[in-house]
Length: 409
Image 1 (cartoon, rainbow, N blue to C red):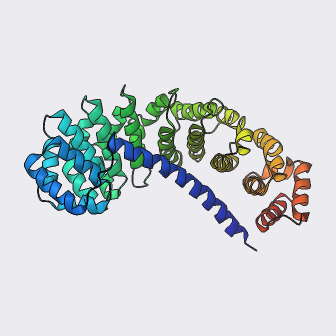
Image 2: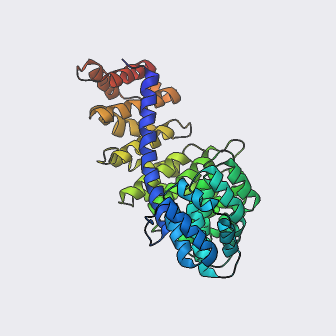
């Protein structure tokens, strides 16, 4: 029989794996389309690519840049072939610093793909091109701003050394200022870049807050047609904003983000959008954003999602509830309502629902003793007794049920 810590670990791993699978599926699609636009991966060998690069040193045409861009997405081996041909990276740098807009745009797309390989190759390309890309962010060409932001996002995702270099080049202020762009694609790419940049602990979120990041996010989050992948990127930023260590003064804009997202849960029908909103809220609850205006719209649709046919929605909903019920400022009557209307019925449902409900109830019992001792309905004890006496209950369910019974007594 598995121990309680082992069961807890298994539940966390299930939730973590489900979120990661969905997240990288979304980001993977975005990476392929934005860097490649309307072209397909080039089906040529390493030897052929070297010949193309040698020809590129002589011709430097847009067609050759496009061919290289399509080819290096095949992996780091292809990126290394390009970088080992003496002079090729310098030619790209020259195009970025030139005045031919088409060459600049194609070169920025090529750089976007070149920085998806190993750290060594990424940092080499970054040192040669990052300053020009950040300059594009301050420019007036939305196509260049879009592609530059995406390339810089790839660079920021690589390592601490890359992020420190980009910060010193002025990346933070450039990205935040572009969130006011009137071009949706530019804003979307900036959000991706900020997500890639902020999800690492070596980056200070406070610097970005001082640049009015929270206010700008609160404006964008109200877009009626915001895309699921943008909300997914937002969720990574929310996690860092909500879990930043040290003194943290929440602003009205931060509250507005949580309340707006919570209300939209009741308005959307698209599964991907719903899942992305749940992730944002789950990460926000880690911090001190929650108040009554936040909990009311969230809990009004929890029951529906917990019984959804989509497993990812159920799992993310459990994560949201788990973070919510552990918060000392979650209203008592809301928790009692959740116990009565959501968790107790789940105890009489299928195996997965029982495990989820017991997991949440144990969190409440451990973190909110005033509820566990005085407000738990008799129906809950009846359900626990039924589970423990049932010959069909699994070992996971039995351990969680016994642990909850002990916590409630």
